[in-house]
Amino acid sequence: MAADEDGSGDPVPGRAWSRPAQVVLVAAGTALVTSTAVFLGLVFLSVAPSNSLSQRYQGQVDGLVYPEFEQNWKLFAPDPLQQNISVDARLRSAAGDGAWIGLTAQDIAAIRGNPVPSHVDQNLLRRAWDFYDSTHGSDESPIGQRGALAQEYLKRIALQRLGPTLDGAPVTGVELRAVTTAVAPPPWSTQRWSTAPQYRELPWWPVSVADYRGLS
Image (cartoon, rainbow, N blue to C red; front, top):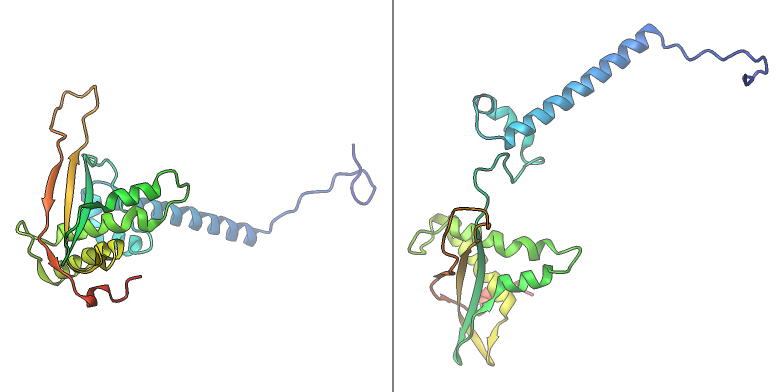
């Protein structure tokens, strides 16, 4: 048997916690476990499908989750995204109309093979198009002030990418389009649908020198 620090050979007794210390430790541990369980439960309710419990405590759930712990996904999503959307743009100047340039294709080229892709390349254009699509009617007219803001945002992204001149002349207009292609069903699926691209061309938007202010 190994000797203890005082050389007596007797085992050193373990540290004994006093009763008040034990009460404090148990109370602290219980509080920690309880608060963690409540937090995880509320986060779960925020991403779970709507139910009586989440509806009853919606205020408490939103108060905890937003904005620091916001989730942009849902548990048990009924139907995953089944379309690929690409955004193209072209310019107009006194020299004529330019060719379509794939803005989404530029982002994909910047992401592919990059172990740490930029957040801008991954999300800026995609979120800008989603913003535009949600704030415009079927005739491409903006709905309220947010619609006008979404249009200006998408326009300036295109102008920043494509520059202020076309064939040596100042840009006077820009046009965008979205190309939507349905994702083909898996081989084992009995569902069938067309994967032909669908084009949505927006109207020409006028461009002035002021539209390039602040763009680098």
